[in-house]
Length: 156
Length: 214
Image 1 (cartoon, rainbow over the protein chains, first blue to last red):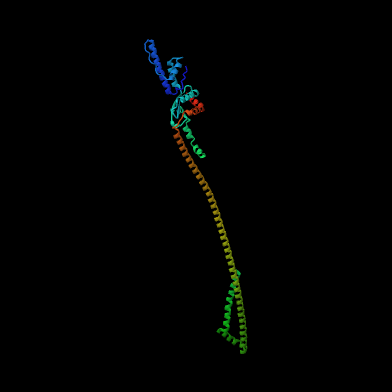
Image 2: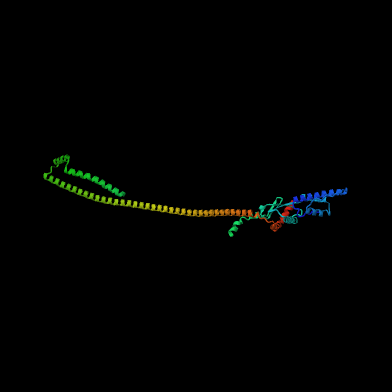
């Protein structure tokens, strides 16, 4: 079964957290299954899970078991490519989702996106993949075009 | 001096030298006869035995003839001497005049030649000076033009360098001002469209990079 992560699971850390949650849930599920088999009364509360984990488990357990999901997540983490995006401020979830969705639709469905922020960028973003850096920050544009400032000032 | 004139003068001197002792000797013999001559005359007297009157007459006639010959010779000699002296004077004057004139002409020619050479030398010197002066002026003008061009170029380069330096400083100041000012007012929400536009513009490049490393 193909694993499709929601946009909220963007980075490697998000994926690791999601894997840990699902692993915890699987352990709880196994424990509850054993208790049911041996007819032990008393049901433990399921672990608290994020909406993304709940949705993923709901979608996954229709066609496969949860252990396969954990394996798929580990395989995903091992094989997915990663892109680092630096913004001028901490991004909101909406911006994160927009950018992650764009990346998974246009670059690779399994890409992981790590977000960082640097206020000196002023705006725009810096996209890094491996050794390649795409600097579309306002700071770079201002510094690149600074030779035009005197000309603009002279024309005022 | 002319060689013929010199020969003529020497001959005249020689003739004067010969004739003068002869005339003096004859004069002395006439006025102061030698005793031997008297003795001979006595011998003649003893041998011829002419009458006294005849003998005196002959002596007077001989003396008169001798005196006449002597006078005539003296007058001719005097006339010749005068002529010779006159001719010599004239000749000397003429020769001297010619010599002086020749020397004057020679000196004049030398002076003219020297003056011409001096004038030519002076003219040549002036020409050389003028030529050198002209060359110096031309070189000076060329050098002045070169220096002016170099100075203009140097001033323009310095001006350009200062302008670039000012522009750089100004650009740095403006950039620093913008960076310092804008980093406190970042609105990512308004940049979403810009961010996706940038991603769209470089989509192929990013996808290729990711696929190459996958």
